[in-house]
Image 1 (cartoon, rainbow, N blue to C red):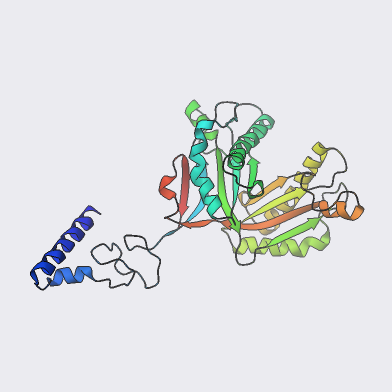
Image 2 (cartoon, rainbow, N blue to C red; image 1 turned 30 degrees about the vertical axis):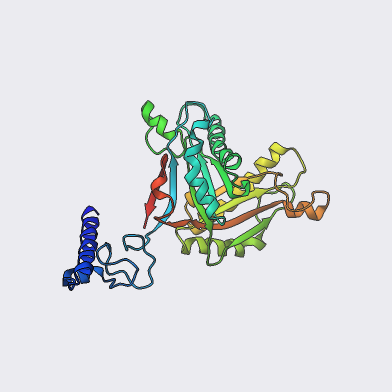
Length: 319
């Protein structure tokens, strides 16, 4: 890069001298001032001189490489047994928030994790609270809509290193996630309804599940967001569990019958929290007893979008 800048400076110095003296420019200078690939960047500055015409380029004349924000790990690990997100880390979420604000079609999936100290039940709840802590900051500080955020808690079940040492356990106490958007080709979204207090899936939905399974199988970069809901009959705790079991039933079919990996099947149970109809009628309650399935794809961005400014986020890039 330094040699390119120096070369450009020398060229423009030679150009200025020739204009003053009226001399013909040397051929090497003339060649360096050309823009043979017509990308708007002269040869002297163009680090990619044979870019196909019409390609979007950066200041160096190189194509804006597409990257997939497939996974990220939040490097501000949590103290043992804690989930609070300190105010001092709020500014570190700015790049993520800006990315979400500039791309309103995206969703962010936040996944909480723990080490293996303590019971699994405690760690599952703790990991959920860690994901919620990041989500709440995005909502309250950066005004990201709650509808664009999903949180999951996996407890100790998805470590990135062993839990043999204190330093390794620290790395496992984290929040990771994905930035996704609806699949552009078909934007598949489906709904399955359930009978009162039932978790079994009616036969009428088999063809729908077949379509979903084939769509996921044919598009291996995609994932499914599977969310269970109930009516408001019964207590909230029971409904939360019931909605989770229903979502997991759908995921189990997609996994066992269509070989979709469990990592690509994101399940949530919301209980009675998000009704789409009144619970005061039989018809309304029937609509609320549902599982929705959305097919999502990783969000793609160019290298120009804030990537160098990511500080405590670690982004895995795939071509």
